[in-house]
Length: 296
Image (cartoon, rainbow, N blue to C red; front, side, top):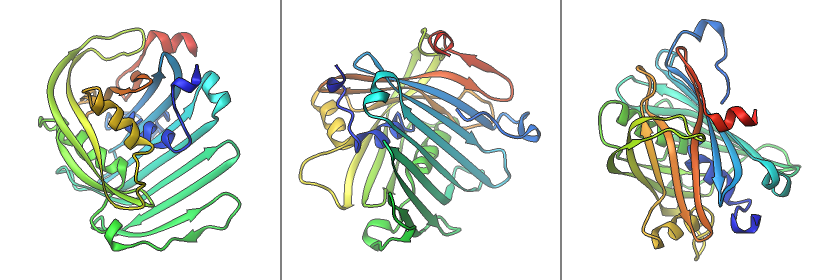
């Protein structure tokens, strides 16, 4: 039953990111088509055996001194008819080519049924948080009051993940820590290495080879946190109780680009969530999983 999946309005965007990362826009522009620093991934998420979410990730490091990420996600199938949600999350900013990425803009657009929320985060050239603008359903765009306690020294969630992806591509373990501001709260996002693991392809997942296995933990730091874990924190704690934190496998699929998630697993009280890399595109190749090809 869908109730076993336990996907709620507050959980879906966070889940899609960590599965986000989470979580394929086709490469745009013929002039860039030959550059393997453009990568496009399609991920299929299964929750309790149900095809629950499709997430697509576009990663562009082809522009000099710049980077751009776009993650889109939507509920699928029967779940999509019960809890219709879709969202897009984008980050772009400066890339010094040495493993440092500083955001200029992070934007999230999330639609639950007929209500759309928009958040725009602006940063300085050095990557410091500058301001947040929000557009709530039926209201005008407005600048939000923020506190240095929750914003100073933070980045956005996509850029925080990219820092680790690039770190792995440079031959390092899957390790890294960043503090993220999500519009209301500040949290620490920590990747911890679990070593390498050999993965085999399946009808759901195209990846074959060695991947860096690491856990991801979110720790509240400041802002509007409830007394009881909710959303992603609740899912995370369910995994901890079962001896497994949310786990991501990263591998480099393009010679000149950061590593990307090739698999994610999250254990919950209601079953295990899996995110599979179902399609991959760059300038040199297109690979599609058997199950995805059947459904297209």
